[in-house]
Length: 458
Image (cartoon, rainbow, N blue to C red; front, top):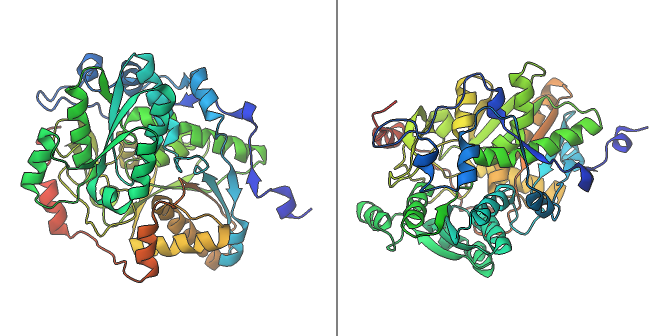
């Protein structure tokens, strides 16, 4: 029997095999991620400190470093069944095009209307907000995947949603904006003139194209000044990685069906939601000493928090109203160049992933956007899916690693996360196809300016 017969193109789990528990990788970490700090006192923040901003149940998940598994409420499992389990795909056509002995698999998270993995946490956060009896929620979004997912989830539970969208994306991706509005969300370009923080940022940075840090500040301000509202975040936080662990749990279950053991697991890294979710159960095995995997985080060279940032306490937002998190950061006032079209624009990184990276359990690579879109184009032409620019960072390194296998003759097994589709990112694809896309890499001086603003704490 040929290998092509043994391993199908798509490995599906049955509906009954959808995980019913989320996995908390912090439970297996010897060095726990550092606690969130109150920016005023420098003291760790507890449940009561976080209540004005976040939903109660989500705070409990955020602060729990010890519980290994959390039950997924049945209402969320039922919603997951609309688009989960998602397929694990063997990239036979890409392997053939690369003429590599490597075996390449990708976990495809784009088979829902939001077009990305973000819905996994959006539905959970909306559920807990509804359960708490809130009127609505606020959030930020960059390229728009999170805002789109949360608009779907909010509509499902009848919640009002106010989205602050990074201005450059608001202008470049009007169709993503319109999907959010179709689902009932209000969408405001950030920084705006609607909030105190937005007006302050516009005054200090005239003509700015915005950043996720700016949009977070505005969303938090609106949540904390409107009764019956709370703020929710689509990445970075511990609770988000918990919800996204369903990606890795499904991936591992699918691989186990055929006795496949990956040599390396590759994910794109902006704030950490997809990467953390994909690697979670594999990292758990690594932390427990049961197996070893090479785990690679891929980030944009124009926003290189892992590879060129500093591991320190920093504000999660540009307006400096959020708690301080210890993470790899470029400084909360770092604003990526408007030239950067590949997403993953956040100035920091998940505290969980930051701790794992600092402890040597994973590695990081920064790639330039023209090479990312080159990989995206090759993938689209061979595998028949137009990938999201964010996902294409992982594709770039997966291709590079497969080509290394071609040189050495090693038959390594590569798994990467395909976070979603790129059909709302066609302005960026147009720039690449027209030869107008260029690479911008911040200088050491650029980064030094933003890193100099790190709070003198921790």
